[in-house]
Image 1 (cartoon, rainbow over the protein chains, first blue to last red):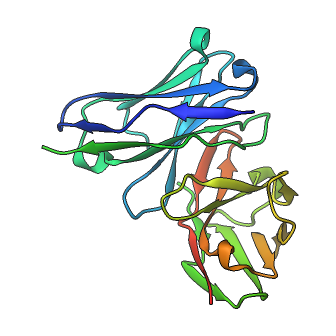
Image 2: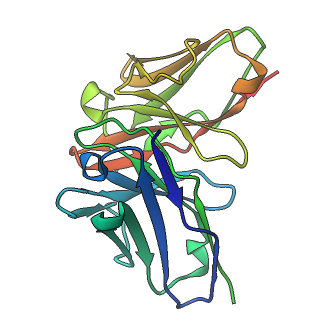
Length: 118
Length: 110
């Protein structure tokens, strides 16, 4: 069965970096793109962008700050979200979501809580 | 940047019918926006309910249906159950490449 398993919670200081992983199983990794979505505490969903798993080409949301980087390691069927120069407002749950851009969006990861605090 | 609009909150009686809508500040919502609907219960990851305006997934209860209605995407819940109480989000895609979520609708079954 399709599964997206994300890495565990992170507590980081302002200015640090964090790398969240999303490991896929149960399907051919490069057949579906991956999206990243974040949700600040008590807030709605925010689409951050997606990565083409065949070409590794990322597309970021229009208002992206440039501090987010999407990457892949296809040898281990894993996508990564790296956030640099962390700010308190980056505190959120980060989700990966399979599909889009040629395939329907369907399965979600369980989410990774990133807390930025001094 | 486009803004996707949803009702902040709605209430439905058990067994009743309710329609949630999803609009765009850029104009009418069409199939070219690939409208999606997601359900999120407290403390859980979202679950995808409807794709491309009206397609259910294997896990989507038949009481949920999607459509395009009056220039908006719509999610209709017929025969509401207590377990349908949740936040519902729609998303639209613009220029084929960038997605935007609506602010979400908090649905109360009461």
